[in-house]
Length: 349
Image (cartoon, rainbow, N blue to C red):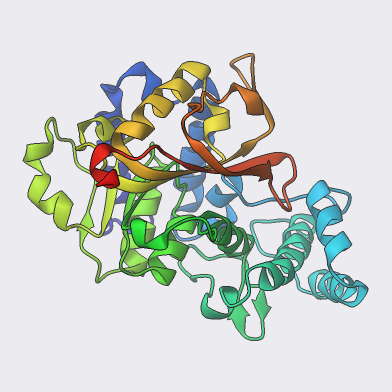
């Protein structure tokens, strides 16, 4: 699987799958994710880690869409004709990005260039300080000499949404993201808020890829790499010193109460069964102190489960204050919500 045996991604994934095997049913992959993981593993075995942004990332939040897709229509309606045509021409003559076909490369490039221009306007100042990391071999698209990507543009827009004016940034010292994929959102927060602690909880192979990706990009950060443990005291000292930590989802149960200040889930709760969704909504107020950000399909039909999850099905407690709950810009088949959890007695002193 791993082209460089010295790095040992294959053995790390084996350890993670072994750790997941004994987890409660609520955190085990749904049938849909079992099927998708077989595809993810096959891509890693065939193409390796080095080019995952052209293969594996397409199973997370990288889009290949037609010119008539809702995202394209949204962006065309908000950008000038010159910007749209300029993006189209640069995409048309920009070549292909193997293993993407020419048509797939054109689709990726056109949406990426439009999305980047939109994000520059909606999140001013953010993308001027960010550049898509070359790690993972993303398609080579440049704007003014800087490597750009869909993932980085979307993450900048999400960062702006999460850090809304109503959110007290001073209250956010530790972030917990469930289902971070390869770590695209974590990269933005760790770059723009270097003092923040970031906890990532996911199933393999995503956890293994994000662990390798982020430890490569931030080699100087103290890291708690995934390992099995049965009690928090076994890892307390190292975990509490870590600036980045990697966990399987069921290990969140072992953390102390209020271990994080902000919970993030982007585009994965809607791919779970309702018993799994209810499990995480019971977990969030135990391990999270202050805020919760969600970005999910408004209606999701879960393959292989014969289930439909709708926006109103999420069991958000009535006492969680809605800072906002709205249709997501660009991907208008999503909703996004920023919620404030009730303060614990200590917070009210």
